Length: 307
Length: 303
Image (cartoon, rainbow over all chains, first blue to last red; front, side, top):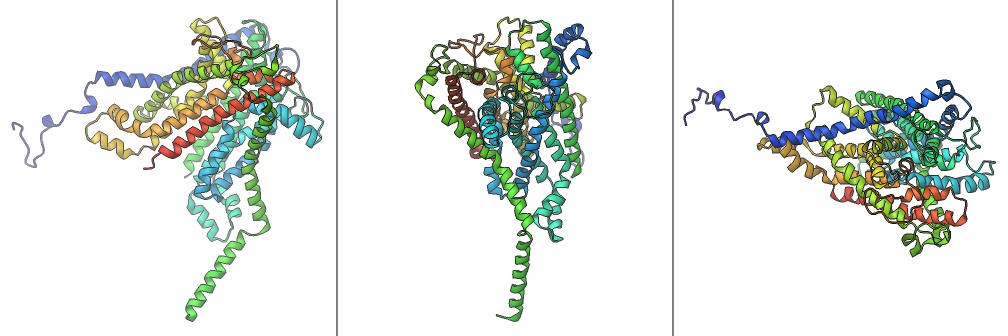
C-alpha cells in the first residue's frame, strides 16, 4: 500500500473514506426536495385558508359595516350565531368533561393492562361514528323520546339542549384519550409515595395524580372545546336553523357552523352578499378555533416540561 | 409452626386487610362506580344509537336499498346506489391525494428535518393547528381551490376529494410520524453503520418496519373522511343524484350527504330510508375501524 501511516497506525487524513453525507447524489437530493415540498404543503394549506377566505370577506365588509356584522339582530348579525355556539359548546362540555375525565381516570389508574387494551379502543370507537349519524340520533331519538317523552321537558323540535348533549358524547373520546395520556405520564413514584403515606387509590388519584397532570388535562379539555365549536352536522340537524339570541337551551338556535352548512346548501348566487357572509362567518370560526388551539398547544408544552 | 412464623403471617394478614379496607369505604366505592359509569356511558349511547336506527330502518333492509336511486315518486323503494358509489369514489380519490403526500411529509419531519431550524418548527406548530381546524372550513378552502383550478361545476368528485384530503392530511401525517418514531434508533444506526445513506435507511429499513402503524393511521383517517358530510355540503354535493359516477369530474352525491338531506325531509318513508342508510354507513365506517384495530393488534411489533 502506498499510504503512509503514522506511528500509531492511524491513516493520514487523505486516506480517510470519503464523507458519504457530502457525496453528490442527484437522485437523493431530488427525493429530499420532494419530501420537503410535501412538508411545505401543510403550511400552504394554512396560507390557502387565509387567502381563500380573505377575498370574499373583504368583499363582504366593503358592503356591510362591521357594526352590522357584530350586531345582535338583522340579516347579517353574527352575535346570535356566536351565543348559540357558546351555548351548545357549554352543554357539550358539561357532559364530556366529567365523563371523559372519569373514563380517563379509570383507564389510567384502575384498569389492568389487559382491560385497558380492550377498553381504550372501545371508547375511541365513539369518535369514529360519523357526525351526521349523531345528528340524526339527536333529532329522532334524543329530542322526541328522551327529552320530550321520558324527561317530559317542553323542548322545541330542534333545540340546543339535545344537540349539546349528543355533541358532548361525541367529544368524550377526545377528552378521555388525551387526559389518559396526561395521567399515565405522571411518574409511578408519586403514586407509590402517596400510597405509602396511607392514602387509598381514590385519594391518590384525586389529590396526587390529577393535580400533577392538570396542565395536560386542561389541554385535553381545550381541544375537546375546539372540536365542539367546529362540529357541524349535529348542530345543523338538531340545534335549529333560526337565529335566536336566547339563553334558553330548550329553544332552537342556529350556530356558526349550522349557518355555514345551511347557507352553503342553499341557493345563494356566488359573489352575493349573503354568499360572502358565509366566508366572513367561516373566517371568524377559523380564528376562534385557532386561538383555542394555540392555548391547547401552549398548555401541552408546559405539561411536557413538567417531568 | 414457630411463634415467629405465626406472628409474621398474622402481621402480613393485618396489613393486607387494612390495605384493602382503605379502598372499601363508601366514598371510594362511589367514586369507582362513577368511573365505571363514565366509561360505559358512551358505550351505552352507542348501543342505543345502533339499536334505535337499526329498528327504525329494519323495514328497509332489502336489495332496493343498495341498487336503487333516491326516488320522489316512490319513496318506499328509494335506495342509495348513487351515494354508496359516490362515497367509494370519494374514498379512493381522497386516499390517492392524501396518503402519499401525508407519508412523504411525515418522513421529512421525522427523518430528515433539523428541528433547530425555524422553518421546521413552523411546520410542526402549523400541523398541530391544522389537525383541529373545523372540517367545514376545509370545505370552504376546497371551494376556493376548485375556482382557482378553473372548474365551474360544483359537487364533483374532485372537489369533494380535495376537501376530504385536506381534512385527513394532518391525521395521516401525525399517525405516520408516531409509527416512524416507534421504530427503534438501533435499526437506523445499524443501517447507517453499514454505509447506507439516510434515504436508503429510511426506504429500506425504517419505512417497512413502520408499515403496520402507518396503515392503521391511514385507514382511520379514511374512515373519518367517508363519514364527513359538512365539507361536502359546502363543496356543493347534491342529495338527489340519480346516476352513477363515471370519472373524477362527474357530479356525485355521498352517503352522509344523502342522510343529511333526507333527514330534513318530513315524509316518514324518507326517515326510514335514512335510518337504513345510516346502518350501511356505520357498517362501512366501523368496519374500517375494526380493520385498523386488527392490523394494529396483529402486525404491530414491539421492539
